[in-house]
Image 1 (cartoon, rainbow, N blue to C red):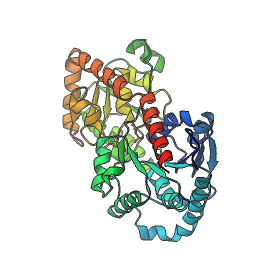
Image 2: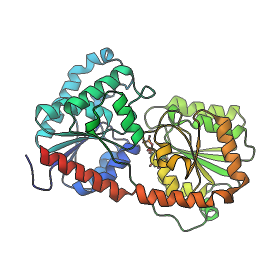
Image 3: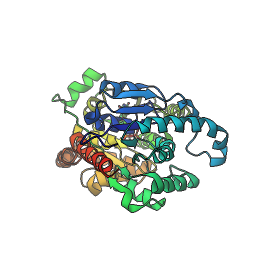
Image 4: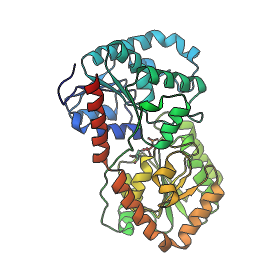
Length: 385
Ligand code: UDP
């Protein structure tokens, strides 16, 4: 293969659901119209990629993956190996028609690594996860790091925290390139009060949490903190995207049990996160396990709203060690409540910091910069093949 300066890329994703990783790829594929995306399931992601001019193929054996859980032992996965084999064959066939394979998730990488090697196509793994014990079992970390060392031409991670975790899992240092997630958002010129009126949000102290509902995203910690902050309301934005319905129900129960039902507004999955962020007094990012990146953090910085995040994973890198946002320890509602109280007591003290946060986000986390870095990397990998 080798098509001069424009190689054909096969983008592979296991999911059709739009969480952060898929939003990242959506923005990254803009220069690659005419390339192919192989998805293991249908969904909003397929539509978004088609709109950008990609040829989207849905793997026929994609359903084989639904039973393959992150924490499943390799032995329990054995019975479905046959079906996974079918999926691997599909990946191999699609890879043969391309110059470079780009796996956008951990499951896509698992399925694409050996097929890509078999047909002699270089493989880029965009690892959007933290490969540590909080998120993955020991066997899985080992298998993934070994496979990467064996099959990947490059491993792209969004943060130093994600890079460190990959190395600790046994990944080879020379494989890793850090490309921070990039995104562009325009600020709505209207003041927060006008936005609140339009969005139907209450006046008075109001904070927001903007993550899919999942135990490790830590929304429950915010509820506990709210119980210590009379008069403060909170919008909880996001839905359980990957089957965490029990956790979603638990959050509502917890809010009711703590007498917070009238102060916590569950808004579900929204398409207007930037406007909602601009409408609140502070964005809280309460993850209890390390964040591989956290687009939400950058969105809050761009919105020009004070950010309070847990010091786990990439948050400290993004918030410049706490210089442009408040860092609190994870799973500490008392510390979160104290940080929020400080903010509500003296909001003016945070104006300059919030401005610097926005400047930092624009300077470091733009979509164009990410697109360029990833395109360079794809071209370099293709040229070496
Ligand atoms: N998001 C959204 N609607 C919601 C909740 C979240 O569009 O109701 C977006 C959010 O703005 C962000 C992304 O989903 O761009 C989540 O990315 P992040 O990296 O913060 O977390 P992930 O879900 O990938 O772990």
